[in-house]
Every structure is written in structure tokens, then in C-alpha cells.
Amino acid sequence: QLDEAASRKLREIVEKRAEDLPASLSSVQQALEIAHSPSALLLQVAEKIIADGALAPEELKTLKMEAKLAAKREEQLRKQEQKASKKQKKEKSGSSSDSEDSDSDSDSGSDG
Image 1 (tube, rainbow, N blue to C red):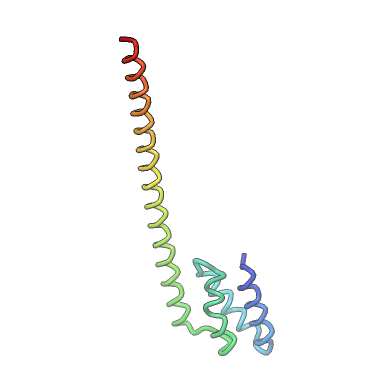
Image 2: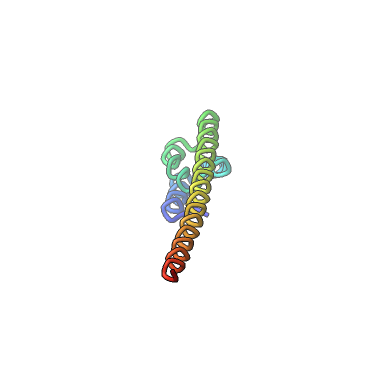
């Protein structure tokens, strides 16, 4: 699903490349198929497609590598966030059991 800005850019491509629309849309399709973030990628390549009608194979290859790197970075961030979340939960559960222990200590101290 494209966001609003990318949808507008796609419409602009269709309007401005009407004479060679199949080739232009083929470039759009190829770019979107490899995109990690389709809307962002379409905004990135739209002017090139409008100007030239298509993306060169080298450009598609570069976009594919960039998409792989972006996916890898996102996966690393997701793993770091999961690790941090687990650590926070562990620390929270440890601190809540500490406070329960101190509550029970204060209760037993008032009896004697």
C-alpha cells in the first residue's frame, strides 16, 4: 500500500509518461517489488522515471542492495529493542520482588 504522497507521484508518472506508459510502469513495478519501503522508494525514483521513462538495470541493482541493507538494519534494530525490552522486564520483575521482600521485612519488624 502506497501512502498519499507516493500515490500522487505514481499518478504524476502516469500522466507525464503516457506515451511510453508500459515501460514506465514496468520500472515502477520492478522498483516496488524490491523495495523495503515502497512509498519512500517510489518518491526517490519518480523524478528519474518521469525524466527518462525507465530505470537502468544498474539503478535497479543498486536499489535492491539498498533495500537489503535497510531490511538488515531494521532487523538488527528490532532485535536490539526486543533485547532491551526483555532486560527491562527482567529488571522490573527483580525490583518488584525486592519491594515485596522489603514490605515483608517491615511487617515482621513491627511484631517484635
